[in-house]
Length: 322
Image 1 (spheres, rainbow, N blue to C red):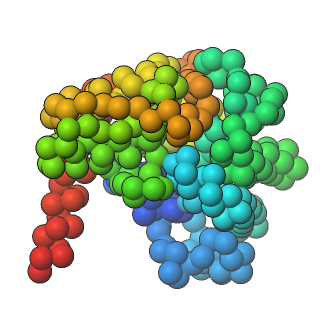
Image 2 (cartoon, rainbow, N blue to C red; image 1 turned 30 degrees about the horizontal axis):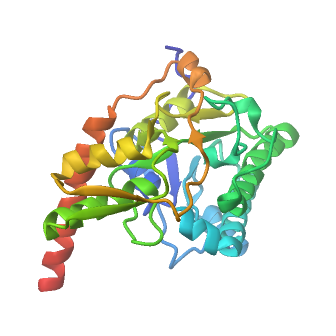
């Protein structure tokens, strides 16, 4: 493992997007460090508004920025809210990165997404396959916004010497996930669907698509750990995929979630619904060579995610009953 080149101790760290799944994981992870965590809700600072971002940065003077803010969602949300996904993410990204430069931030980590890679990218997907082919049409606006963020990080490092680095996390899951029936990512959508089916003793659960696409899943707490690892151990022009290096089919994921939730009924695949990209597995050679690897096994991670989901659901029910 390389020695640290940057110490978090005593630093003021702004987690942009602290209410989201990744941002809340960053806040949990930073609680283990001797640093000051800065957060601000969107009701006070709209990250799409440059003047609000500038004013807040001028007042709070963070040393480090972890850019986890963004508009995210599953295949339906990406494909139907195309303008919002592009505008919101472009605006937030450009405002935070430019603001970090203007206000002398020492280090910045920008979270991209593996959807930046071509639809038919080589598997596993290496970082250097970026911009080598056509994107997946269903999430192209989001992907283009994320690619712009990566290139903006590169440009500010090249022109201004900013110590900014981009990370490309694979599909995330865990505490803080979005379980909206229409806008959730595949993991959260399936977890809620199988949970509801178990409670209702439903005879079958319908899963969108053919079940054949393969996906990789990373527990969000592993992402937070990788983020701080790169922050403390790397300063250079490369960007890094963050994943586990292994994948499974949607059908296999559905079976695993059914097992964890205790569902005993049938699983039916609706072939009329879109599959999306055939496979998304990232090449994690570069990050492993730096010295980091994931810790949470998928089976254990599904159990942890389900426990968090049921606890959060119970708490919400209790709040409504008061």
